[in-house]
View: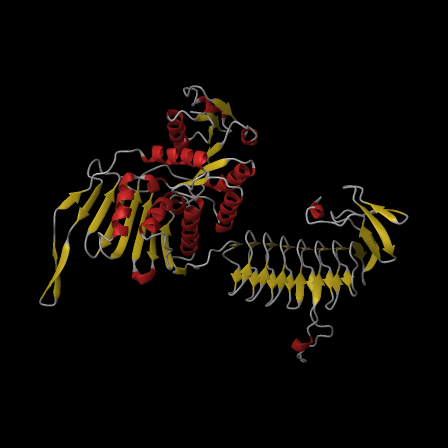
Length: 530
């Protein structure tokens, strides 16, 4: 079999992945930026060793990249691998935010790349049998599910126990529930070793039809336990992965009634046999199969994204002291800091980031990949395009439209009434303001309402705009006056008669009139970032 797999990260879990892919005869490269860690892999025969991840990605022989790196690096390293045309197997969690997870899933789908996420329980033969039993109705109507993942294990200093342990159990519970998302979650936890890292969490998930599940995870426990229990109204099932034998059992306990009171009728546990295949090997084989056939992995990006959405809401609840947090049934594809307020309904594009103390009013349309800094306010009915950057302390009032690629510097000001008085209501006198594609507004500049700022124009810091600004104009002062022209890339143009040239990117423009220039070749979206 061709050696075409690279494992990145040769630490505790990475060593297991290295072993598995080496046994399958497909391991080509072991990559780790720590030379001492790589030296510990010297016993692995017939493989290359690499310390530079980017150099690894440029190797055409490597078709699949397996990432066993810190969770905070999963997004960036997976993204780089997908951009390099590699198929990716990344350990859980897929990313640390839902917006990042959505971006990775979309990238993999658009580029027809395999994206497998390491939720190992998805490949456990016992859990596969239990999932089939539930879906066939053998346990009856599911009433509740609980899981314990406990250990005195390796203590993390980056992600907390929720993000480190719970993804396995959440993935398993969602699978048992037919990949249905919970309606709401509540998570409680305690930090005993480090005030910033939660060591123990108890999470409650509420599904439709009042089905409940809870997940108890801890790395401060006197013994190791990995147990999943499913309670149905006909039978009960237990999957105890840490038990030496009889890992999967079914109990045909019954609850009968006498004199209007329930009483249990217990039955002996029935052990359910299953294939003794190593889940990690099955997971690795699934990755190889999908690379060859272009099939979808069992633990694919879409399923992992659901787990990530649940984790993100659990984290919100944890930070709010166990408050119940509803799970939006629509996938949230943007990031909003916990201190930000986003009022529904809104339409916010994929990849947009909304930072501290920002307030987005309802009925706002915001495009993809925008960034809103601290203490920004966006009023109702505002329309904002793609890739817009709004720096700290900016209020975008109703009547303002920001087209694609607009930059609003810190504390720049939009007005919406010409002659405001506190004691005279003039809400009906709002005037519209249009900031066209690619325009930049400097820090502390003021855009008086009722005007248009042209494409790729540049308003200097502190300038007061009291009239329309032409395309590509560079304006400064109070009131703002034009002192030159700027290229689409933001560099001031050199003037040579009627022809203007950008000294940085070489783009050329022609003077059309005293207050107008035009590029000699129409600027495209790609050109605008030179």
